[in-house]
Length: 179
Image 1 (cartoon, rainbow, N blue to C red):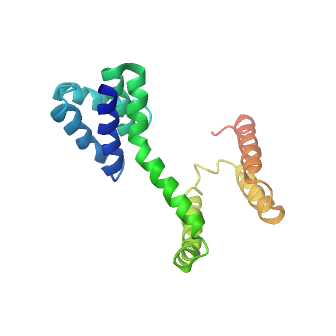
Image 2 (cartoon, helix red, strand yellow):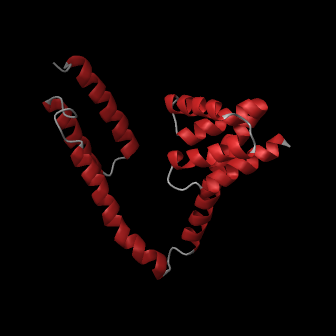
């Protein structure tokens, strides 16, 4: 019975918890402390502190912890997967609908509009990183400009370029450490 309860509680939270992990904190508290009394308010406060200290989203960490305290490793896996399941299902549905209707003008036109917007956001993020902390030497700028030019002119695989640029950047840090 506990497995079904864990699944249902965290599935609901994953389904209706819009806005990220912190928006789910109150929903998790309501279910865990008030509805099911799986822990006290003080224990929940400790759970939040622990969830904030560990890497990853707070809601995932909380679900994993609650699942473990209630039903061991299987409970932690079930609670975590249940929290993620609504997002996975929704993305699967959206992806299937997108590929089914990708030639429709109702899909095609917004995608045509969004493409330059997304490109602009990526360029803006790249420009924000162009500061003296990111470019510690002339060589780091040469690595950046060279990989951009190689990709643009030769259509080289970007993953390969990222690996090469990473190795060159690492070597740059070893041979020309920051002062």
